[in-house]
Amino acid sequence: MTSYDITLEWPNAKNQTVAVDARETVLEAAQRDGIRLPYDCRKGTCTACVGRVLEVEKTAPGDDESSAESVGDDDAVDIASAFDYHGLPEGLTERERADGYVLLCIAAPRADCRVEVGPMVRAGIGDSPWG
Ligand code: FES
Image (cartoon, rainbow, N blue to C red; front, side, top):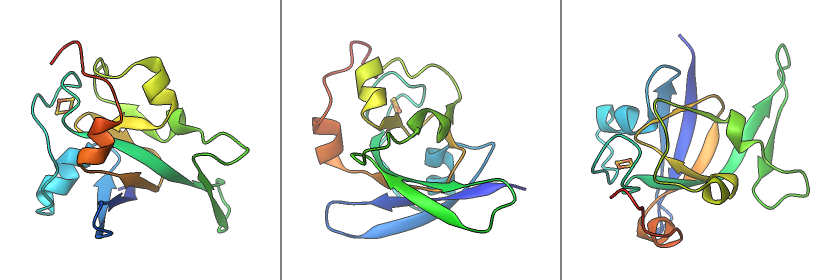
């Protein structure tokens, strides 16, 4: 069974890594491991669960070597391929998604990532029109 390591980075520098099965969301995996992530609607509208991708680990198929790309590197991080959504992320604008914001309640990873979480991330986006 494929799983990906998602490292949640909190503002107090406390990092927690959770193994997320390819079929589950980051929120589901975190709750299974007893990690308390904020959430409300669980359907991609309220943005209570928002995180921001800091780094995506890239591993070429059949390649043991991996490299990491950070948001802000000259080469744009392919955030779109780092997560699949179980539903529509209606709480985020296209611009916010392009800036690395991700709704962890409906996001299933496709790569190992470092994701910033906490109230400052939520403060970085606008209010959701849905919630
Ligand atoms: S909990 Fe509402 S968008 Fe994730």
